[in-house]
Image 1 (cartoon, rainbow, N blue to C red):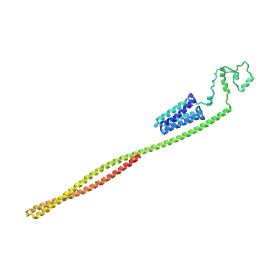
Image 2: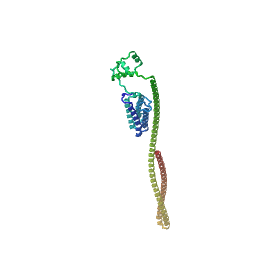
Image 3: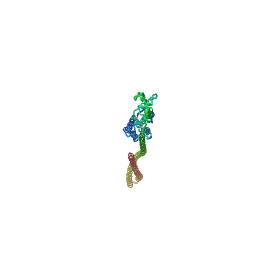
Image 4: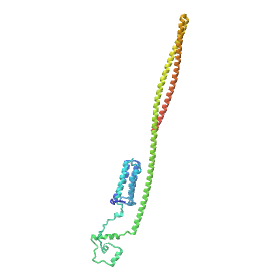
Length: 382
């Protein structure tokens, strides 16, 4: 079906093979997505096969009528224009989408100006010039120029033509006037009509089989495209899940790193406090030793004063006794200070032990956080 019967069948055939070659080669050269490349290759291959099976000048097998071929042209137009949007590759492959749309419009333009009324027999017959309407040859002249039907021969037998009739060779206008009678006299024989009917039946059967095969191929291609779309959707979902899991691992790794930094800082503070408590314990031990020495020295002085008091005179006894009592008071004070220093030393040692335990706990927690961060990093890398 065409609007203007302007383009001959031979030029249409050349355009078919050119479009098929471009649809196959351009996607393979451009290297687009799988659906985009498959669309061009499949449609181009179908166009090439249909063109090879069409009964027109460049057909190979010539079993498909040219009028049936026209339906395939319009189907190719619909497929080329709708495929980028139906298969959702108009955003991923804009170049191939534009090429398929342009190819579809070109096929549509060629189809609407093609003369699909092509027949090999009609193409092989010489063209006859129609006779002018105002020139009509007499019946006798037509019968002399060409053999007439049996009824006309009987009429000649009853009415013989005079000798002075027009000669067999006539002027060009008379021959042109005889052409309609000749066309009316030439009728196809029943055998030719039967042969033509058989050829048409065979062509129709072949076209039906070809249409069924194309429909099956289209259904198979649609099923493959649906399966490919489902696989792509599943792959996209898996990638999104993997991305979310990687983000979770990244957050866990960052949290573990922050906890590790906090644990290391707490461990440093605990170490500093332990060092301070140890220094305090050492200072308390030194104070205890000093007070113990002072107490021993006071006890020695007391003993000396008591010995001196016993040997001294009566007037010096009271002074020595007072000095002895003062030395005893100093000894008691020094012993009390020594006991306090010992208690402080015990408290400092206990605090140092607790700080060491806290430092070890913080170190273990930092190691656990570091192991969790390494595990998260390994999951993220995987």
